[in-house]
Image (cartoon, rainbow, N blue to C red):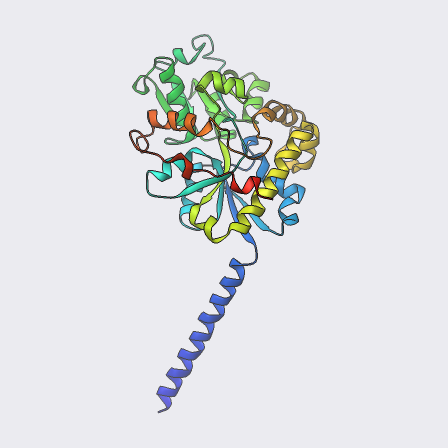
Amino acid sequence: MYPTFKKMRTLALASMVVAGLASQHAAAADDGKVTIMVGGITKLIYLPAKLTEQLGYFKDEGLNVELLSQPAGVDAENELLAGAVQGVVGFYDHTIDLQTKGKDVEAIVVFGQVPGEVEMVSTKAADSIKSMADVKGKTLGVTGLGSSTSFLTQYLAHKNGIESSQYTMLPVGADASFIAAVKQGRIDAGMTTEPTVSKLEKTGDAKVLVDMRSVDGTKAALGGSYPASSLYVQSEWVKKHPDDAKKLAHAFVKTMQFIHSHSAEEIAAKMPADYQKDKELYVGALKASLPMYTADGKMPADGPETVLKVLSAFNPSVKGKHIDLARTYTNEFVIAK
């Protein structure tokens, strides 16, 4: 009898531990905690994420938000699908790509009405590369193969009569690793964002070839506005947490309004000091980036079609597939009162 009693007591204790853990997990899930993975938190294209935290807008909405950084957008996407994070601050185009793989993901706030990407040409190669029509036989840097920068690079080259078999794409990451690739001569040109663009211009190592930091520049390059940086989440999460989605959208919309009502200097003053080791360069890069941000977090009307056009040309997952663009984004939460 004693062994049986001992066994029952052990099982009972185990059940209590499991129940306790489950209770803790439930409490954690209901305490407003939201973890967001940012595809490179120091990049200015994703500035609204950290700025919202710095301004205290998450707390104002009663949210407990944790921001994590993952330089590669594809890796951030995987974290979302695995359930390790509730949201990703990354490029909107991931929502289109994921739909072809049976994953329902939608952008609920749009930060960038344009990519904020710039094709930079190494000063050493500037004499031979005057436009994307001159990249035949060259090595072009991208953040990663299969990344947004790779599809944009292929599209720009194709538009100028150069097919992807006629040049080499080399994944070189962003910021310091991108700068190193330019300095070491491993790439002739490459696509990157601020503040890397301003750093390369300041040192004289590279020049702007194609500028997609503004609406006009983007329309000239791609034929329309190109929504890029955004907050995207799994559609199932939105259904289960509509209040959190609404609060996140409200916090971010307040940030977009702050950006459009303050100078680059005033915005920079709110950001962490370690983001701007060269204050003058950071402010200059931010000034050049301000036109990219939406004022209200809404999806530009012509944006999804432009993104689909680019992806359909070079993303094998999207090419030839039917995409329901209405399922890839919503303005519901940014306009909710």
